[in-house]
Each structure stands twice: as structure tokens, then as C-alpha cells.
Amino acid sequence: MKLLHVDSSINGAASVSRGLTRQAVEQWLASNPGTQVEHLDLAVDTPTHFSSDAMGIRRPAGDTLSEAEQRENALSETLVSQFLAADVIVVGAPLYNFSIPSQLKAWIDRLAQAGRTFRYTENGPEGLAKGKTVIAVLSRGGVYSTSEAGQAMEHQESYLKTIFGFFGITDIRIVRAEGTDLGADSREAALRNAADEITAATEAVAA
Image (cartoon, helix red, strand yellow):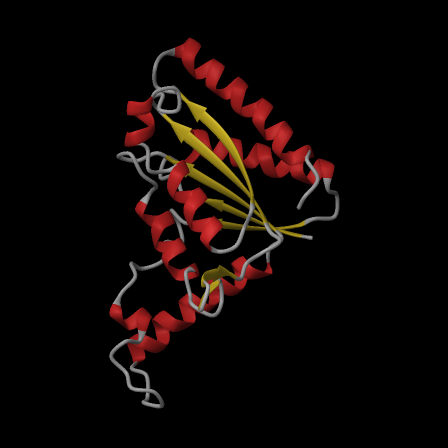
């Protein structure tokens, strides 16, 4: 079994999500010894933003790719191959301005490749990355899950569920630490709740 550990927080050792993804990986290994782990730190190795060079849309079929297109295509191939090779993906996603970090979005844009992670059929889109488990570790300074207004403002959990679901992944496990910036008691409660959710997420049988 292979596990891909993805971090995206820019806060280094002070990051809530990084501490929680590390905890999730450690607990997964305790429950699934022998799992091979690969770590991708998107704050350090940040993919370039998606561009026309990455799409290759300007080139007719059979035409020679430019140097920039070759470089961008190689990056996309490296990232999507790494993703597809993993059985389990632990993703750390802090909430930045109501959404995910731009470096995490840049990574996801490289994964969204027709013919690799999804395809279009006569019956609509079909995900091709089936059979994987995603553990999405979410951190939020405020509280968004307990009210309609908060849920409407949050485009972190909703987006990750949508995009990984589009890739065909049905086993998406959510670990949520929210209210971490609302005082010491709130932070302690958030981390305690997240720890319980990590235990549940990592002890469950992989789909």
C-alpha cells in the first residue's frame, strides 16, 4: 500500500494542518504497517500555476512542443503519476480566505487530466481514480460548519469533496479542526475533536 502525504500550509512548524496530517499518517501506519509513505510539501515544491503551456492548446496534433510546454507537461505527468500510484492520500488544507491555498489548487489543476483522472462518456463524466481513500485534514481559524451562513462562505471542504469525487473517489474522510483562532479553549477543543476524527478515519477499513 502506498500513501501520499500532502501538505499545503505556509505556516511551517506553527501550522495546525501540518501537525494534524503528521498525526494522521502516524496513526495510519500504526493501523496499516508496511505502508510506503511519500511526502509532498506544496509550500516548498509549489507547482507553477496552470497555463496554456500546460494545456498544450496552441499546438496542432503532431506538432513539436515548445520548451515551456515540454517542461509544464513533464511537471503535470510527475504529479498525476504520483497521485495515481497512491492508494491513500492524506491532504492538509488550511482555510485561506474561505478557500484552499493557491498552491494546493495548483496541484489539483495538474491532476485534473482527461484520460488520467476522469473522462467524458455519452452518459457524462466518469472518474478514473477509483478505489482510493482520501483523508482531508482541514483547519479553520473560525467556525463554519455549524450555521448555514458559515457553510455558504466555506469553499474548502465542499471543493475538495467535489473535485476528488469528480476523480471517482468515493471514500473521502474529513478531519476538521475549526475555531483554532478563537482563544485557547476553542483551539484545545478543535484539536481534541480533530484527534478523535483522525482516529476514526485511520482505523476504518480502506475502501
